[in-house]
Length: 233
Image (cartoon, rainbow, N blue to C red; front, top):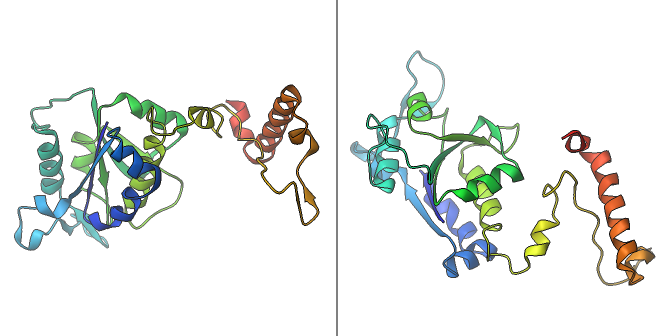
C-alpha cells in the first residue's frame, strides 16, 4: 500500500512516521508513506495556498489550484474535468463534517492500493475540492482540531497496524476492541499481587475454558457499561 499525505506542515509527521509499528512497516516494505508539502504546488508568489472567503467571514480558505495540482501530480493524471477515477485509489479529506472513523471503515480502506490523505487548515478548503476531487470525508470525532494533520496521523496508525504482516502476532489484533461488537476484556500481568490488588484467580487457574468464559463475561459487562450502542448493532 502507498499512502500520500498532503499538508502545509509536513514536519509534523516526521516523529510519528519514524517510530514504532509505522516505521517497522515501512522498513519491511509493507507500506510506503510519502508526505507532500502543499505549498510546493501553489504556483503563486511566496507559495501562498489560501485566500479570504467569498461572501465575507473570518479566517482564510485553502484555494483549489494547489490541492488539485498536488493530487493530480501524485497520481499522475488529471482528475477533473477528465473525471478519470481508479477504483484502487482513494482521496480522503479529514473534516468534522465527515463520517465518523470506525474500525470497520479502516478495514474497508485496506482494499485500496493507494490512499491520498488531504489535511485541511484555517476555515477549511474550497468546496470545489470536496465536491469534485475527494472520494471520502472522514471525521475522528465530534470536536474541532486546528487542522487535519492529527486526524491523518490517527488514520495512518490505525490502518498500518492491520496490514497483513505488520503486527507479528495477528491474533492480538483479532481480539481487540471493535473487532466485534464488544470492547476488549481486562488484561493483567505480573506481579500477581500489587499493593494488595490481586489478579483474578481464574486467570491463574490454567483452565482455558473458564478463562475464555470470564473474558467474554467481562467484555460484555464493559460494553454494557461504557458503549451500550455497540450492542444495538
